[in-house]
Length: 254
Image (cartoon, rainbow, N blue to C red):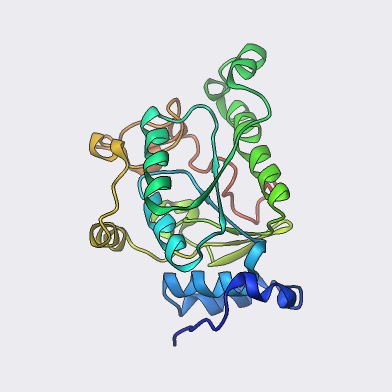
């Protein structure tokens, strides 16, 4: 089965409100398509309701490249916590210029200096501190960005093979008022590597230094011989920052 778009998203806005946002039905539609076809379908169907996110992590270039080809012009949100590695900020500039994406920066309402003055280093204060950190630096800015853009369909580059918390995700799910969609959910690591090589996409600079995942500098460490990717974030206490929690959980945000 293949999908051949007949129009583009901006041209179909007049019929968007008549399309049911059933996550299970959408998941079934997307499952039989390839990643580019999934993005084309979503762009054709939802148009200006779409927004994507990127962390400019180790494999962020793949989703950004696919978006630039199959859903050009949709806004791509980068949540600038103020605590990214310097290499991540430079990588963001490199990919943004290379791919010509519509990059939007979402920043916390509270500066890092003010946060640390009032609360100390939240990432050193156990689960309660980590949850508060995520709320201030990631969840609130993301909520605000979606509202300002008027977007209620959120594209993310999550993949099932990345962690146990993502292994059973569907291609689309309800996240409160937002329909969240994962176009490369079923991609294996080998497919990721092959795509980056085929399209000559630059890797994150820290990939060569042993990092298996990428986040804020204070909560991300290189992979050691005895660990796995999930132990490299937040001292192994958690993997998801709050943006990508299981929608069945009571603390699910956004």
